[in-house]
Image (tube, rainbow, N blue to C red; front, side, top):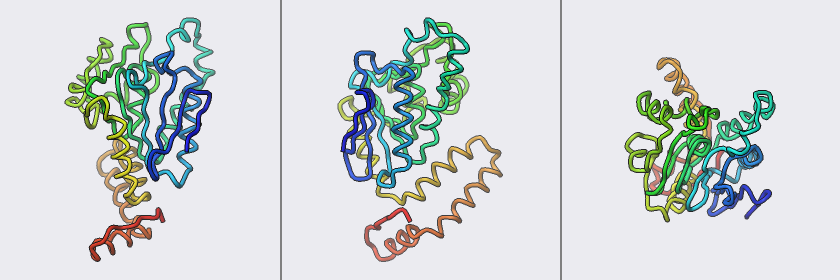
Length: 261
């Protein structure tokens, strides 16, 4: 199945239970203007409620994942106009998605593009990928999680280096820093991300959703509170049919068939 929305965001279904969301604005290097963000929010909201989708792959082009915000759009922007856009609502639709998101990144993921990749749960980078938050070079700073998600991914000292200088890091360095999960050849990023998404989609959906919720909600809590959250979610899963299916399949030495129930 394939859905095109104004030729900007393309949604495809390359495998069972897997959705592929592709930025499709090559003439602007996939720059994230307000319309692209709105369309991304629409797509992720739809996928969040789609029981037939268990994992999502997010990608851009072969040369550019997303080059950041549309700078031309900033030249006449005012404080009030930026406030009235409420772009945070669009980003929140991605952040709130309960399905695992895998970003397949080729080429440049800069500014808003890097922030978009960091909204994913897993990042698969091509060898030629470049990551950075260069907003400081045009007199601003990240405004869609670039400071907060970056510091949580790579720590204070690496994050400050990228944020203060606006420098780019290549995929091998990004892998060492912990900014990406895995690096593959440039031509294999989407295929590898879809392969991983298929692997995840075979897992029990309720357990996967609980893992994502507990990890993201617990990472900023005190350890005792986070462990309580984890324990309650663990206990909750024993009411699911998938838990019984998984245990029985293991005992019976067969492949489990998870239904998300």
